[in-house]
Length: 334
Ligand code: AFP
Image (tube, rainbow, N blue to C red):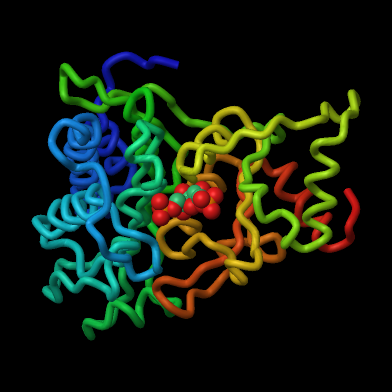
């Protein structure tokens, strides 16, 4: 998929030129995201050598144990965006409340981020991610970022993720195609490697933590039974692939087709994943690549956030499998 020598920054600028009315501010934010991703790729790569493994001994606002890399990732992303003066506030998995950065006139954006997705993988050299969604604020001059992001005022303009795996890959969309860039460590540049990613209509794999499957809605259990039941015509059974990092599992489904699901269960009656900084940004990416993202009952993009750390069930990936899951939930049948 190599497309030879198009850097992330050049790509962002070319995207901007498609919009004569663009101020360049969104581009500046995406460039900063790339910068933060390079720092994180470097630190994740050497975390074992510089004492960045392990817990800090506290829980984050959503009750998960905070790792040293979680804190570092959050600080890095916040710092990168704060420098721009273009962001009014940041909603982060690692921050209790919205971090207000600036209420000045040019701070027209809000960032929602999970700075380090899959942090249970940090100490075992597993895949990790950063998820981001960038919203443009409404026209009000009142600086109330929380109300804006929870209301209808803020509009999602861009989203994407960084995957720290065998290589570091940054995937983003501003609504005109989904593009992936691989970090060339020697050059220190993200280079276009996955131009205009399209999510296959159907796949051969599913990703889910089956440990709590007995607690799922019975129709969801039927869905999994269906996927794992052999049938040559419909190319079943599907293979299970689950890494514990949403970004890594979603990336597989985005590129090769398939479905990721994290439904409601006994321990997570509303689902585990967070709407604003996990589900919504990835839904934006997947939909712009031709896939589908829903709670199983409702499209993710139609869910109105009620709190900044709100959780929702998530079914995301190829349109065929996500729609199939929705049908199972509604009827118990394919
Ligand atoms: P963190 O971002 O807090 O590390 O959580 C990871 C995650 O949100 C998502 O990336 C995984 O798919 C999911 O949780 C794993 O959860 P289980 O350990 O319950 O399977």
